[in-house]
Length: 212
Image (cartoon, rainbow, N blue to C red; front, top):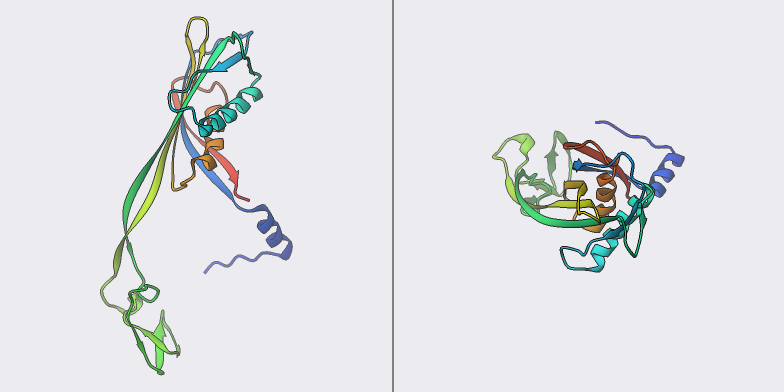
């Protein structure tokens, strides 16, 4: 058995800082980005889905990434138009897994005051497992329903004058995280990682997210 020993300082830092989660996304980019772009003003297209507060929140994430790249939002006559859409699909998956009846609520116990055996150890106790997989007997299985979520984010940039498409990116993410708002900052950041990125290529982007 591997043991992890933490000093008091390290333990406190771990508790305060929380744990980091790695968010992995598959990003595919197509672009015909001009070498020199003088006017970097933009405006958002009308949403292809309902204009909700959630969508506006995600537009704010895109706005922040564009700002880091030197783009500026303009209320009138922008040079560029930005579109975005997202979908979240729940995917239930049935998983067959082995069950240890000693810990299972359906396990049968016999109450007595004699010795009991458990995982190779002997001692005095009040309960004895009806079946211990370490001491032979048929295996126990149960079907557990897990929920996974498939997310897709699409962001496009086109020239406002002639509608020429300049940049299209699609981000795919699969995880067991139920909350889309919890993951969307990482998905938007992945969409603009290394902007404009390789043309016509798919890549895996991994970002650390602090859970603390």
